[in-house]
Image (cartoon, rainbow, N blue to C red; front, side, top):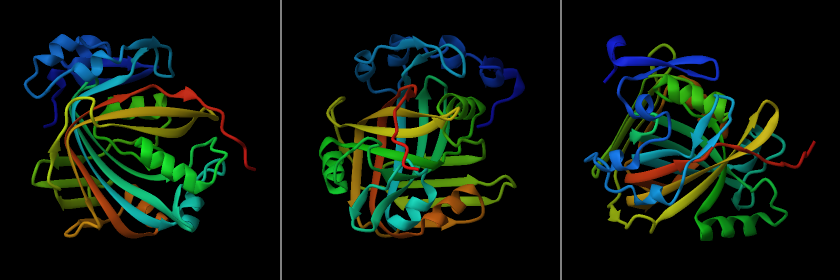
Length: 305
């Protein structure tokens, strides 16, 4: 539900002014949230995962902040598709290479996120990204793939990352180097279905998804933790950003059926079409999860020019 002027306050992020919910977590704690206070929120199952990840105060392009950014209750839906490596490589910076599952075939993902309780308050997000080989791999691509699957740790490059709040856009774009913009973005994920819609600048449909939710399995906190490293360029220098997802209830389907992904007109649709996906091979849904998003750190990426 949109907020009104009366229930927001303005805050400064590296010279950018954004409105945030008055009395929300960011307004009260400025990223250094009281975990005991969050634990009293009935939407949050536990904060044990975060107690083992102490926050650090750092300087950043958005001013002093605390890292990691904690997401105490979130859900997500990921569609993973096969695409020709040639099409993926055409959209990657020259320093990066597709992670191939077979000669000439890479992985493309469309993901939708809903963050119900978070250090920067409620927001939704969507992404078009590709799996890439670790920037300093020095190995055969197959070895990289096996290592990634074994350790549940992937590397990625994101082409699109729209959000529905100003603070998420400013922090993501200025602080992390991600291709974020603000748009109308609705995401609903429950145990029966995922529905999502991303609007374009004119309010028309950019991209929509409707998909059945795979059967969910409950996990103890810390039992099912995955890692994702994303590469971005900030002021011409490469950085890596680590995110850790603590799945509390999740499920997957291989070669899913009854997936209704519709393309319209907009930046996400253009990015997805440019990758020329061939077939959806996996649907992963987390109906309840938690996430720690670390601030980016400088990373040495070989120059392949």
